[in-house]
Every structure is written in structure tokens, then in C-alpha cells.
Length: 514
Image (cartoon, rainbow, N blue to C red; front, side):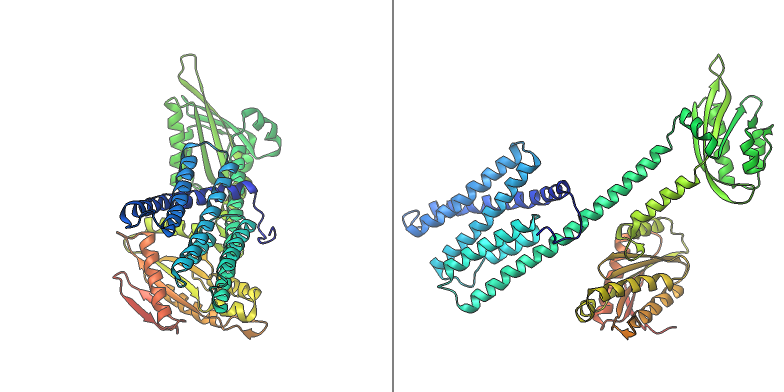
């Protein structure tokens, strides 16, 4: 059971996920069961003609009362008693096992009493158990096996051989459902852990920038470190020799604010940021910090971090700005690399679901009145048949080939992402649809030509296209339009392209080039 998933996850992470999911499920089941069984108890006691006068009614009453009391006790313990995570997990697992066994025994008696062979409600309970509850595989298999054996042993004499076989297949399907779900859950937890580790690395790197003045002095000999002094009253600045070597400017600069305004190699926005920093110091700010992308005298662009501390006179008035300029290009590159890694689907080499969604939202917000944001959703047709015919390694190769084609065929500006399984997304901001539709048609043709060891694998895809304009468009609305267009393409026979216009009308377009 330990090797069911190749993803390494910690026990604490699995326990956390299990408690989060199972708490919601069990509380809902307990409230519902308590309400239903309370009604059944009232019905037997007060609405039945015979009340508890018959053995059958007493047995049903016992079932109803047992489930009602257990549900009530569970809710009291869960809400009112403080427990450790491990003990609470044990409570949830016990509650799950009890409910499934109760359902099995109740169904057995129901069939014995009424011969209701077609109403095997324990099947529903087993399917729900497999598809909703988060638990270890051994626990799932043991519970399913015990309830299966109890049910079959008690009712073997009443079921036909075919019914036993069908129920056996159902139990095996339930086990399979949970094994697949457990593997997927472990993958999600492992990916979440990886993202958390990357976030911690980012935080550590950001923390490294918050160095004390003493630490800066220690590393000055090995880094591009420039010191300067700015006289607030005379508006003149004096820099260390590294300033001249790095930027090619003189070390002593009178009228420093005028010098900043006349520099040709930096943008107006950068000039305004430096001048604003100087103005803040004049007004009494004790500390200023800026990150700027500046050109060296060689023309190379590098990131610098500027720190300035204000030194006041005996009256507390600003007198000198003492500061340093530090080359942080290597740190910025590492941060950019880590941020990109967090956003990427590492296997496909495209943006992951969260990253492509965030990018689409940003592009919608920045959309100009004469621009449109185009989106395609590409879904492989009959992908399962490729896996079944050639094997999963070939299926993975086809997925990677599709992601590569989406990047290779893309005109400038297109961003590609994977939103799950064999479904991909691409977005582009443009003024008309011509380039985007040509790109989409080419994709359909190229996907059909994917080969494995010189043999066509029979790959094809369906594509839904939509466009958003300024005013009233959200990511959800744009995605829904593309998804509906994809549905129309599938419905039209697959290997098709369907376009949803801003008016909501769907048009099937030929995959052939214009």
C-alpha cells in the first residue's frame, strides 16, 4: 500500500488534508442522519398503527435509534471537545466505518424483510465512501472488503450468482476509484509542498536583502558597491570611485538634481523616482530605498538597489544624505527564476493553470478600447484511445508534442498554459483575429501529424475560440465562452474549430488555412 503513489508526502500534510475534507463530509452526514432518523423514530412511535408492538418495528426502531444516537454523540464530540489532530482523525475514521457498516446491516435486514433486491442502497454508500472520504488506502480496502463480505455472506442464499458477480465488480470498482483518487491527492499535496518550499526560498532571498550596515561593509570588497554623500543645502553629490568605473560619470557633481534631469541614458520615470526620493529626504524622511534598472557605461542593463539615510544637523533639519548603490542583478535573476518555476508546468514547459488564469486577468484589466483578448481552449480528441493503443509513455509524448507545437507555432505575444489533463489554453492581445485564427488552424493540422517512431498516432484536437473586449468582461466569462465553443466543436464531429463571437454566436470554421 505504501507504493501506490510515487509522490513523497509527509504524514502531517496528509493528516491536515484528511481532517479538512472529512470534517465537512462527516458533519453534513451526521446532521442529515440525525434529522432523518429522528423523523423515522417519531414515525414508528406515533404514526405507525402498531408502534413497537411488532418485532419488525422494534428492529427498525433499533436501527434508527442507533444511528441517531451515534450521529448526535459524534456532533457533540466534534464541536464541543478539544482533541489533538491525531485523535480527531481517529474519531472521523471510526465514524466513517460505523456509518458504512450500519448502512450494510440495515440494507441486509431491509432485503430480508421486504425482498427489495433492486434497492441495494449499500452500493451508494460504498461509492460515496470511495469518492469523497480522504483516508489511507489500507483503511479504505479493509472497510470495503469487510462490508462486501458481510453483505455477500448474509445474502448469498437470496442472491443469484449473477447478482453476486455484479456486486463483486461494484466493490472492486469502488476500490479502484479510491486508489486513483488517492494517487491524485498525493500528487496535489506533493505539488503544494513544492510550491511552499519555493515560496520559502523566495522569502529567504528577500530577507537576504535586508542586510545591516555592518554586513554591507563586510561584503563591499567583493561586490559592486558604490557609496555617496549628497549635500541637501548645496545640492551637490560626491560618489566613490566605483561610480565612475561603473557608469562613467564624474565623482563630484554640483547641482545634482539638474544632473539627474539631464541624464540621457535613463527613462523619465526613473528620473522622477530619483527626484522624488531626494524631495522626501529634503522634507525630513529618515530613510529611502529604491530598486532601479540602470544602464552601465557599456550599455549593459543591471538592477541596482539604492539606500539613503538622512543625517540631520543639531536642530534636526536635513543636512546630508548618506547612501549606497548595490548591484543586485544576480539576486533579481534568481528570484525571477524561482517565480517562473512556481508558475510553470514543469513537464510540459508551459504555464500552469493558476499562472495562465492570473495572466489572463491582468491582460483583461490592461485591455485598451481598440484591443481584444483572444483565448483558445484546445482539447485532444479520443486521447484515451492513444493511451490504450500505444501506452501511457506515448500518451505523455503526445501531450508534450502538443505543448511544444503550441509554443513553436505561436506568433509574438501568445502565452500558452495547461489547465489539466489533455486540455491547453492560449491567450493573445491583438486588434483583430486574423493571426490568432491562423495560429489555431495550424495547430489543428500540426497535431494531426504527430508521429511516434515514424508512425502516425492518430492524434487530433478540437478547439474553442472566444474574444473579450473592454467593458463587462471577466476571466470567467471569457473562459466559459471558449469552453462552450469547444463543446460545439466536439459536438460537430471533433477535429474542428469553433469561434464564439463577442455577441455569443458560435461559428464553425474550417481548419484549413485562409
